[in-house]
Picture 1 (tube, rainbow, N blue to C red):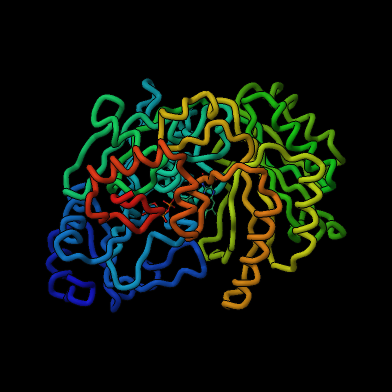
Picture 2: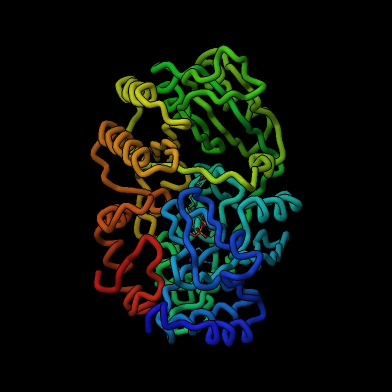
Length: 460
Ligand SMILES: Cc1cc2nc3c(=O)[nH]c(=O)nc-3n(C[C@H](O)[C@H](O)[C@H](O)COP(=O)(O)OP(=O)(O)OC[C@H]3O[C@@H](n4cnc5c(N)ncnc54)[C@H](O)[C@@H]3O)c2cc1C
């Protein structure tokens, strides 16, 4: 049955069967409900099912399977490929499923999939504990976990999936399964990096880490080739307690940055050291010594403060490319500066994250995220103005920048891919990982019901 054949009556029947509710195009809340994070993704689903329970999830999946309506699955709505919504299809929206059960003694938490990173982080930090997500609090725990999860704990505790102990997932056949290393281990393997291809996760169980002592915040340095290369060298040499995210970009007109630096290229770094405050100070010292900081807000802090308040109306229009780098030497740093200086996009940046540490000690075959040996994650990004002409121009810049930085690692981090086609999805997974994912897909979603994602088709 096609999307057009889904009538209001059948959606009303679905709605009546749910604990949650369904938002339709003529509802007052429809426009707000259909919005996702990206400002240039403007799709109009036939209906948005705001589910309230695992049973609801199963009912929506059953409905989609029986009717053939295109199904999008949305949690935090931050898909960098705009893949959590649909034109004319049905959105299964997890946002209202936000229950949290912390077990402080066992240092674990069960968290429903509709939570954002900041919501869960704030709740667990009340116990002095947290699991690591990314750099942005509003990102959904579901999407980031299913792709891997690279952020402020990567070097100390690994990826988000390295702290994932179990999950509950409704597969295409409508069955709710609890998966872990003992129960359906292949499915548990696949959802740790394989994205939303295998079903809808309703709850995650994470191991929690001690965050009672944290030193972090923003450090802004002038972006010379020496400082950029020196920053990456310092991040590689730093103790694993420290993870950093460095954005080379024109300085935004922030009130606490002297006006003469606005618009000039800076290294806008965010850092997080977990552990003793004196050790944190020592770990940050080499970065402070690279140049006189323009802004230095790195200080003892509570861990959730790494997620400052966000403007809910902020809906950016980025064009981005991602890759892994082996090194950032002076020549690489000069290339970064040259590209950033050549563009007039309202926002443009090269983001560099030094990996390694605990993330690199997990074996390549242990999870579907296989880039364990990759040393530096890079993203080049620039914003377009919403017009097709400008978008194409910004895409060319990103493509050329990406090609100029390429050091021969053709892998990609799946969570930073845009809608770049099947070849780039393949780049996220080495051959052996891909073949295993295809096997899991054939077993758990043979008709590719879950295809609005970085898709692993059952035919391989
Ligand atoms: C501003 C910004 C900052 C980011 N920073 C980081 C970062 O620091 N580190 C990092 O690793 N990543 C980062 N990301 C990438 C982010 O991890 C991915 O975009 C992620 O998929 C977003 O998850 P979400 O739940 O918000 O997205 P959604 O758009 O809701 O979903 C994304 C994908 O996951 C699938 N999905 C969502 N929920 C479920 C579910 N419950 N069960 C099964 N499948 C599901 C969807 O179908 C879709 O394909 C960032 C993205 C943005 C936009």
